[in-house]
Length: 287
Image 1 (cartoon, one colour):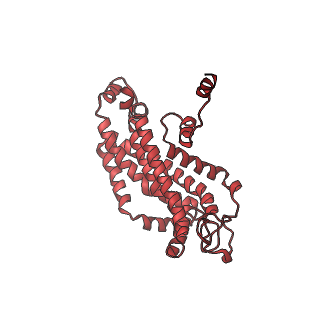
Image 2: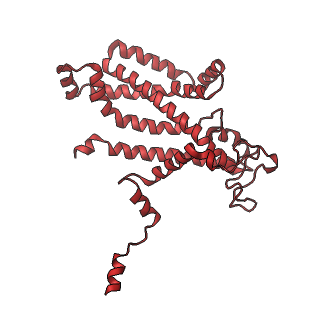
Image 3: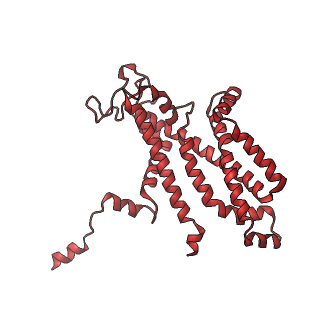
């Protein structure tokens, strides 16, 4: 009987999935959490984890296959590219550039587009007509032509890439936010706020922005997939894809590995955005 009681009180070992559920906040999806945790580790401390210099050239080691293939080895777990550079080291080094570019682009384009869309949708009339004509003009300019012009004027660089993304994508936010605000301003609580003497900024901050949160969240998570693979001037996932497009037939891992990194990040951002949208849905909290 004592042995039986002691066996019942002995804690059972946790499987990896159960352990993740214990360590994470309740309800938080494990896949996006794991992906973004790995990205954060690579972005903040990747240089201390790298076994090779991501920019070190060695043509004698060009197109070394990944470790699980016959001619591969664990010295280069994900193989090497056409210049003999370590693919894993370049993916880890490019994490910071790709994520920082995406963060800057989302915050700036989302902030500008949201402000412009709220002003256009709330005031309407001539203000709305003027702003939306500017949006139409900007959207009629091809993104590639705009990027070439800005690169010729400002020169290639990280700031130019971010500026091109911001100028291209703020119109998405402006159009969608304008339509949402035109609907929200007809609600009773906005009319009551006006009667109570609340200023425009107060109405924007207290009544419109909280109700736009879910829409902005979905737009931001969708934009991650649009901008994170854009080619950067430094080591980045987009640059790796651009360099490897000519070697897809004889060295598939050169383009597949950064492509998988981009796909996993986009999938994780979309899943996390869906969870945050449902978690912070005001209609759900009222139930």
